[in-house]
Image 1 (cartoon, rainbow, N blue to C red):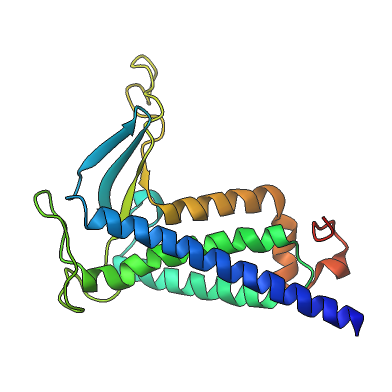
Image 2: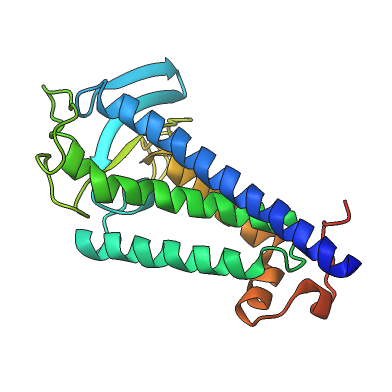
Length: 222
């Protein structure tokens, strides 16, 4: 009974962690995007420091403005990916997996969901941004694109430094050129942490194993 109670407590605690992180990161992401979308014309920018700018761009593709395959395919791919992450988290929560692993997956889920919201709804509820026009809310269905065809809003730009002109291939280019959003940052940070610290737990969850069965080190006792 005591062991079952501990598992129930862990399930509730980790489930709350997933919910709080996913919802809070999603809300932050959408607040930033809506402020930029309704406050700046397309391609406008504000210089915050010499190495950080807010630049408003939109893209049809994946993280960091990449354009791969068609828009509908990418939107459907996001839906499938998010469904997988939800299924996977439901399956492993409360099963002895490290809380840090749960947190990492929650950040990835939140980021993927944030960009999916843009694709699903922004085309329905906003008119189109342009060089001379700041977008505003419109009645649902009267926006610039149909369902699943909305553009993802990006805004963070970090021109950390420019490579010297004499360097081959990269001379004169900005070291870190992509413009990205908060959701992209959640995904990227989550993936990096996942690959550095938690790769051994991925197959356990996919093959219905638990840390107790494989006896790897976990951080639950910390």
